[in-house]
Image: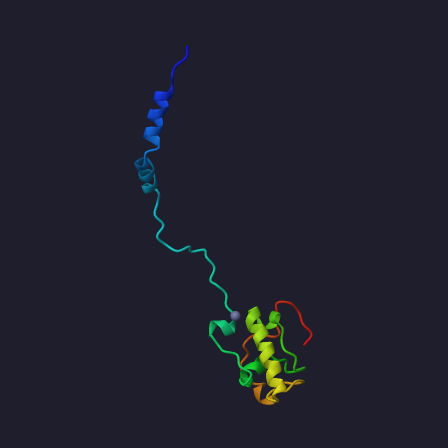
Length: 129
Ligand SMILES: [Zn+2]
């Protein structure tokens, strides 16, 4: 006994696939009108956070990124700067040293008491300077 089910299918799809069927079902969804509370705050380095322009003439700022013992420039794992700012700081320090504004083998004694922008004793990984 073969039955023609085409009329039933047509009626089924006519009911289920109506645009109003979908729109009413979506209206039943809860509306989330709030921001994601679990989203982490974007981390910014200290120079980006305060929008500080690094310049080779600002020796007081640049000397913060220099070790008082060896005069070496602290790495990114100590300064916690972003890559762009770290490269800029290193470039500007070399520029200031070549211009004779900054010492190369030590930190100027007048800058030794300056407040610390980061803690060299607490780097992301250990260092020798
Ligand atoms: Zn940055």
